[in-house]
Length: 93
Image: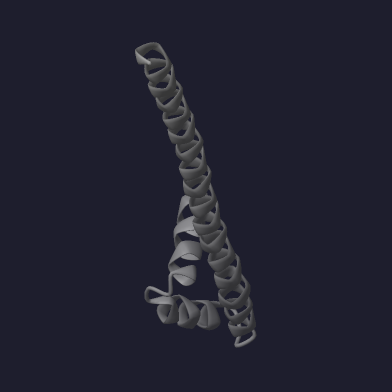
């Protein structure tokens, strides 16, 4: 029963044949059931949109952190290479 309820809820939120669910709900209860569907679609889609934005922001911030980490590693490698070259130049002169 919970499985069917979750599937119906997801069907409404993804707007896949949600009107059939609306009509079935209105025929089994009353016309006031439309308010529930409007409320669910409005706030459910708002929550899903914010979740999507949060996932995207998190993904971009983790990519940026990894780029900064790579830049720090590259800078350290360049500094070490410069030190090696300077040491080599000192020994050859």
